[in-house]
Image 1 (spheres, rainbow, N blue to C red):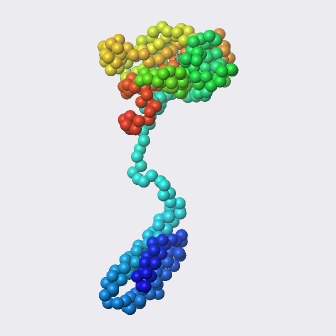
Image 2 (image 1 turned 45 degrees about the vertical axis):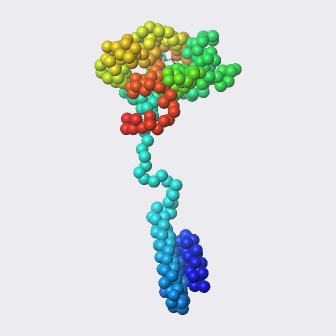
Image 3 (image 1 turned 30 degrees about the horizontal axis):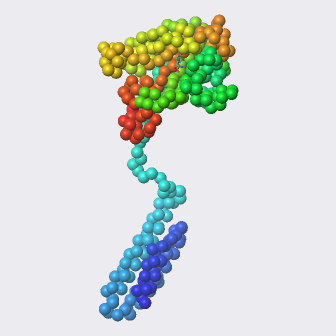
Amino acid sequence: MITERIDQLMAEVQDLKATTEQEVEALRIKYLSKKGLLNDLMADFRNVAADQKKEVGMKINALKTLATERINSLRENLQACSEVGGNIDLTRTPYPVRLGSRHPLTIVKNEIVDIFSRLGFTLAEGPEVEDDWHVYGSMNFADDHPARDMQDTFFVEAHPAVVLRSHTSSVQARVMERTQPPIRVICPGRVYRNEAISARAHCFFHQVEGLYVAEKVSFTDLKQVLILFAQEMFGPETRIRLRPSYFPFTEPSAEMDISCFLCGGKGCGFCKHTGWVEILGCGMVDPAVLESNGIDSGKYHGYAFGMGVERITNLKYQVSDLRLFSENDQRFLDEFQGAN
Ligand code: DAH
């Protein structure tokens, strides 16, 4: 009988609950005080047969230990809760919290934006889902220009065309249509192209576009800014080379190479033994582009440039496979811990 009573109390104590200090105190009185249930048990214990005393005694002790522990821990929990204002978040990650790192593309994008900010460029952004006019029309792409083709552009809607922008040059248009010169902006953003995914190509990547429109802007100004950028980004020994090129929105247009910063221009596997690596496209804004966007091309001139963030990141950190940038492999990302 007494053992049954002990078992029943054991089960009860196991399950004790209290939401206030008063309730905890009431439990203490009920079980552990002089007139409590445990002392009642001790009174009954005197009547237990001598040969069972040892076993029953041990059971009562176990019950007492359990009751004391339960009541103490209820009290401690309530005190801990009241110290943090009653709001203890049991789902919170325990310490130490593991620090993350910035994504390499973010690190490099921030660095590019930072360099141009110091030259007086301000940040501008635009939508990734764009209309045909801002991506192509206002940028002087002819109606039948191959870049509009399905093979390059992701179409969201066919007529009138809504696309995922295939370059950040669309942000130039958005800035020009709402601002009169002087304009000096740097526009980072994600762009999309319908390419098969491989180590060297992806269906989305990131660009940074630069645009300067004012009176008397010359190609020399462009070149000067680009030299400065290259040396800030890749070191003071860096040289640049401009090769004539073609873009619908610039005239004249050029592509810029930097001296290979691995071999210093002597030629290595990385620069395919040419001593140079291409990093961006640039040129003087075509007067037709200024006019399309409501800027007087008789009065104002401009230069523009655009570069791929992945490309610059590959050069800086020698990442050999573009897919690493979007796979979120923890081992890859961890390599950029502390890179800022
Ligand atoms: N939009 C070009 C591309 O996606 C890059 C570019 C080249 C941007 C020359 C420019 C520029 O602003 O002047 O390949």
